[in-house]
Image (cartoon, one colour):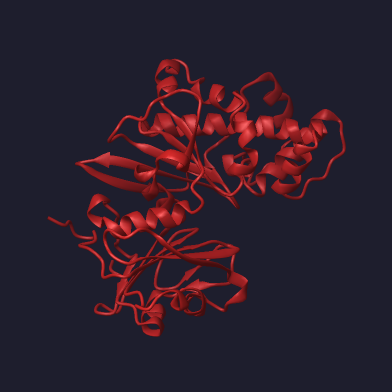
Length: 346
């Protein structure tokens, strides 16, 4: 039995798309047992909206036009016009149906798409950090720094995977160690508070680096996470200390989420910045902070943590959903449009 608001299945081929602030990535799933067929990546700035981007990037790669589109966007899905947070595009599913000949369009949150990919990861898709073993059919959690700090849970219930997106990246992040207590007074507050995203994100890492430089009495000005990681590669003391502090803080936040949903299926670190700071995540500080959750240190030691190495995790999550929609309880109310209904379903 298919519950109201859940998919009964899709018409193939299914186009899957990961729409970020800078780039749009596209792939096709030709049928329920087909592998993910990458079609290409294009800059959002090179196109006025998503329809011409699909025509120029996807249509030349396939003889049969897609009938369904499943799209991941950064931010909430509200109404028939969905503006992107960090790009000029406005996703209009009804317009896409009319212009591209689609039967159906579904729009999901980007970290919800990342969560959908978790059950299928294996081998080189992930790199484990520290101890722990995945318990089958158990909750999983994914989080990662990019422009912001994304987070989502994947709960296993009634033999089904249930993705749970949210704004977990905005949880509070306070000091723990003596070093933290010395650095935290120098951190610029945003809205009178310090949330995790305000330190562990594209805008957060430079904010943390500024605080570290003030604490160390060394003048530095880092504008981007990339400038910090490059300086750390050259052993700049402020950059190295910033990433050490960030890795420990990231471990605390990941551990909090693991406790919140009892993520015995693992915690997965993704996002555009994570691969650039991998050596700071694997040197012991991240895992030690993750496990330091008294009185549950023993439990935390059993929960595995991973760096996601898959090159297109959101696309792969959407593709998994496209192949086996019955395996996932994805709530489609207000996020599904069809040529038959002519509007999003409430």
